[in-house]
Image (cartoon, rainbow, N blue to C red; front, side, top):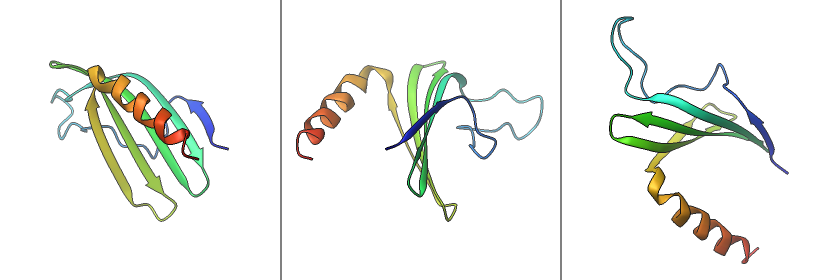
Length: 90
């Protein structure tokens, strides 16, 4: 069973880190959830940019490899429907 926790993780990299302290970041954090699942950690972040809200889902394996996908918040229902369909196949 996955462990869901809210909040940040010091090992979790933001979408974009400012190169210089005075530079503005690409997006603001709205909410974050961390999922500990077996040998991986998943981060689900809701972010706000000038173009609207979007989700960023990152996976970090025990070996440190990181994979990230991003999608617009308006597509959330499509992702939920796809996961619900996949769940029926378990």
